[in-house]
Length: 139
Length: 299
Image (tube, rainbow over all chains, first blue to last red; front, side, top):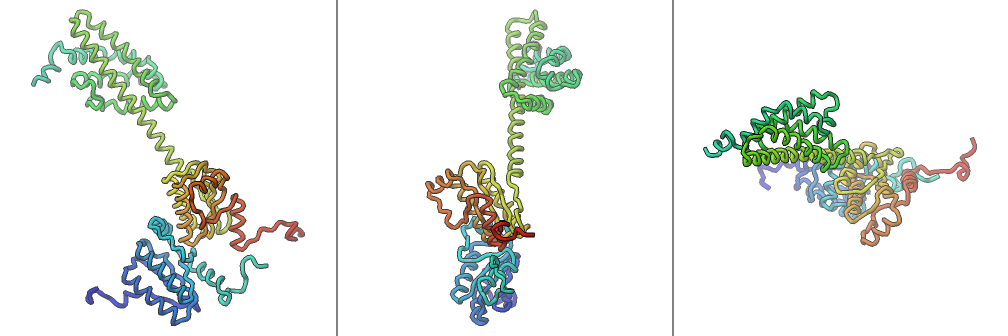
């Protein structure tokens, strides 16, 4: 990495905090250095904010390679060690097919259709966050 | 230019046959119009059949003079290729086998040969034999051409139907809010499995479905490849945030899967589509209640 080419502001993926949940939105081309930076930032953010959940929205990602797949798996593993659960939301069909063809089924990662679903999913597992207290299937 | 000489020479078989075809063009076309091949294709008017016959005779004459009687790619045939294709295709579509079409074309030969023999009564025996030989070769090439196009037509039909099958055979059905199903029918090959996977995943996004049911009741056999495709579809759906349920695995298929040593451990399976739907509904939080048992019968 040459100093002349590095742009510190663009090198970070923003991590938003919503209560006890951290929200990361990946968009467009994610360079390897950015992905690695995100892995580090997220670790610090989870520890610093005492987050119990992480939602990664990948609906803006059109191309995924084996490296990004591994980073996602690593994020999930790291978050779990820090007592937070990771949910990936909004993966596109073409990306999902590519991931499967690459053999990256991300077994340790929970998934949801949308960010909203992901937040609900985290709420269901964490009783404190459960909205309204109505659990599906309860009388 | 020895070749030019040979084909252009007065009294050579090529020239003789070419001249004969030009001279007797009208008669041959008239006779052909009465043969099965032309009669069956040009049902509307006989004039049309005669017109087509003339075009074919012209083409034959041109090829005969050019000295490439055995070559289906010869220049003269290009002109009538479309016409022949139409005839071959029309015969094939009526359900005739290639050999029957071949016989139809072969029936065009005797009238021409008769005319040729009648036309050259004083010709030397050598020339007569060579001329009729050439004519036979010419007609044989015509036969090959028609057959070729007839077979092409059959192949085109198969391709068209395969495409239709791909489109028709994989409907994604919305069973409930958030539940989609794909009833799979017939053999699954990799091309079809790919289409199934794509359409299902598209539908998951479109319908915001949290449950996708793959019903394989109509699949006669499952081999390791098909099972692998099923697993891939399930994994891809999971990555997108939907849960896949496989239903309708028949006992024989279950046994095959066990025999093959395939591990479907991570896949949720249910016996029937109804069971799968019930499972998905329950997971979505809507219980299925029968009026008598649930006490909801009173109104």
